[in-house]
Image (cartoon, rainbow over all chains, first blue to last red; front, side):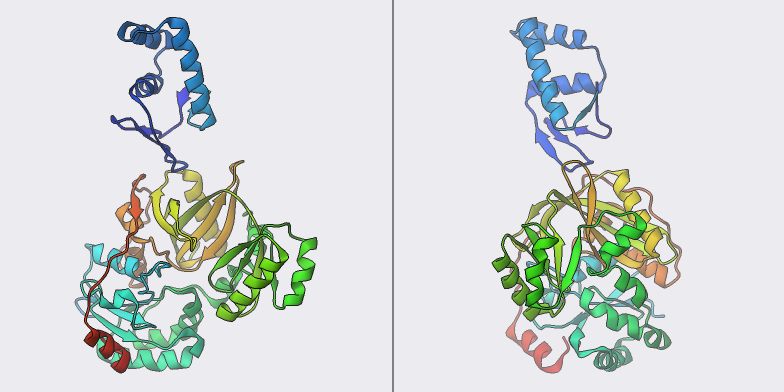
Length: 80
Length: 347
């Protein structure tokens, strides 16, 4: 799973898809997850870091993560 | 040639449905490789560009395109005797035929134009675009021309509602019923004449590509843009430059197939299943052309360099994400300027 080519994410959480011209504003958590995806880090590493920083269980985190990825796929922002 | 290049530019109607002239002039003035003196060629004393004295050095009124090429020739002869024009960039679809016709004569006087042939222009006409698309592998919505209200009765066999009703040169409406087709037919006929064009309705995202062809089948440059805000007139009020190689390749394919010699705009519709339909080809630069200069491809300046045989580079890159946001601005002038242009034809 990787972000589509050329997708730009600014530090303020603004995401721009240059192929379609669509842009989105994401919250801090979504930005963090997108950074992990962009750097192609393993999901395990991401979940470990988030669980350490936030008050969330692994099960809940992975469910929310799947939802988020589903949403990104729907918007055509990631390749399998 | 003078130290400054003297360039005549039409399309100074920077109104809610803007002509490209002001954008073209901004691009020319933005180019650091030459200095320009801009001669505005206006049809109406209320074209806003006429009063933009930081952009336009002098304006002359010219006869409407419907008057034909002879009155235009006489007027240009007079203007040229004073201004010694080097290049004219016409920016209205409706006037191109006159300038193409006058091209050889203008050249004798020392005025350069960079325009396609009449045949090339006709091939890409709204009425013949579907044929061009079929021949060259572009998707174009099904199109039919009608010249009488009686022909509307037969449209139901070929087109579903809604269908698009377009004017010969400008304007388009989406008709949801036969009664609406009739209304729009009369409205467009009264304004732009016959025929009226009927087109299959294609739903999707509007994307435009501004480009420049060198007349030998090569693309000098092309910038794709997605409209972010569309006015009730269907005009893009804001847009963002896209980074999509497929779109640039589409422009390249178009120029190769048409051997287009001039600026152009491909109006595309991207459907949900990611097909691109060519809705229209505008045979001149679009009103948002200054965005191409801002994104790193100054296409109007490249046109001037091509026509004056100056060194030119064919663009390969541009800056994605450049945006334009159009705005309205009350330009203050004095009634004396309006009077002067209206009565003497010069300002």
